[in-house]
Image (cartoon, rainbow, N blue to C red; front, side):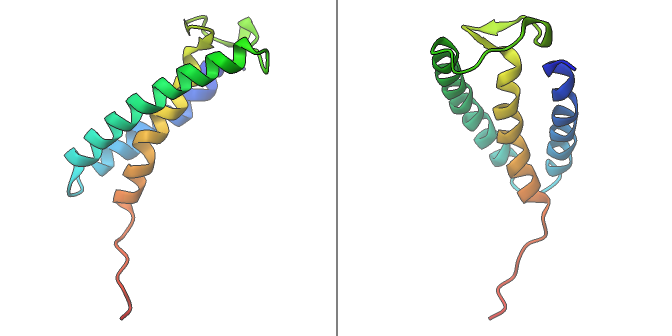
Length: 102
């Protein structure tokens, strides 16, 4: 199995949950915050993935990746931080509000 195929369920769940969360209040603010978070996480991923790959801490078999890279890091590595930046706030928005018992 290749890394792009492994990503498909994560990306689909992220898109579905994010779309559902856009119906909740403050969706625009969440999306803007997710975009800024994505920028930061992508930069950090680029820096640290490239450093770790350059240090030979790990490698990616060429037959399991798409071949598109940012530096030494395969593009697939960037999907995880992008998904998490949108998925977590969306899940939080869909959860029922907790009311204080006091």
